[in-house]
Length: 236
Image 1 (cartoon, one colour):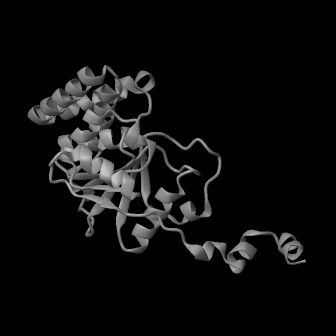
Image 2 (image 1 turned 90 degrees about the horizontal axis):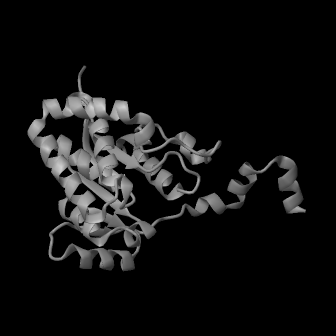
Image 3 (image 1 turned 90 degrees about the vertical axis):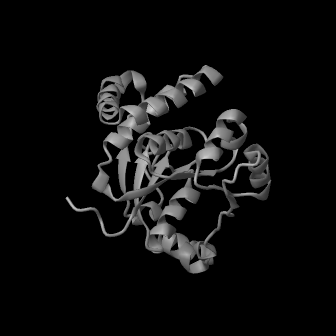
């Protein structure tokens, strides 16, 4: 099986699709329009029965990671044991990182994220074409991205949005910033906060505001989204 001609961006998300995260789906759609090939890795299945129209335009394929340790433990252990057998030194370093993070917070999430990352990497053959990992939200998705980067050797980056920045343990977040290729956030206040956490590390932290396509609010766009009878009522 030959690798694709164009490198693929692997994007790790908490869930996909989600009706509350149009800022992410809009970004994916725009990146595809710019020529990026994307593969989505979602940490859980959608919880809504419908999605926005823009999501239907996204061509990226989606892989769903095991969501629960209790339910999926056999599968998680199976793929992680096989990966550890193939890359014992690399896996030992990732396990050391996970144990350090667990002892720091006494939260089992670090172990779960390592297992999910191992599952992801073991399902990601060398000829898959994925050349970079990017996570949305600085907590769980970025933890998975960090471990997946450590296990695979692929670089990773992440976008930090809102409460994920301020509810994360500062020590855990600082560690993620230190090993990321770059970090993106959506406000200047967030950027300055992350810069303070960075403590002299050279990781670039970029501020990119969320944009809104104002054409979505034009009269013609509204007309297309409404039944003809409703639009007649609006005009009257």
